[in-house]
Length: 103
Image (cartoon, rainbow, N blue to C red; front, side, top):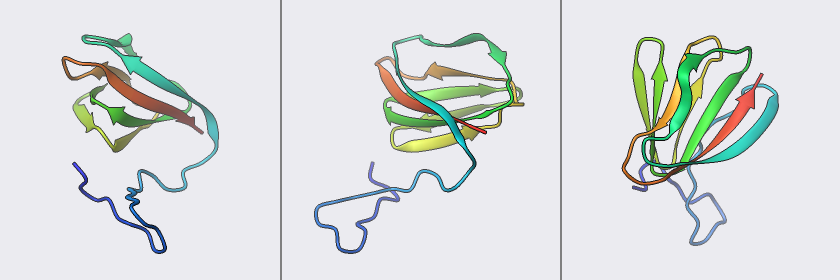
């Protein structure tokens, strides 16, 4: 579960994993608690800004126009706003994720 984590120089008992780099201007951010069979929107949508999703607990399934991507705990995925998408809990327990809107 700690794949790709490192201990940065001059840190003790500390593990970190870079989830993203520079990518534009942050518009807003939120945290979501997604229950079993939860997610949305029920119909895929698009918009001008991108979404960066970071899963902190559980597992999310991001449905895209032509594919699906599973994002596991401690992983991140960027969805370009012009691609139809929706986000769903992929487990039988609660998933917690952070969504950051980026322009």
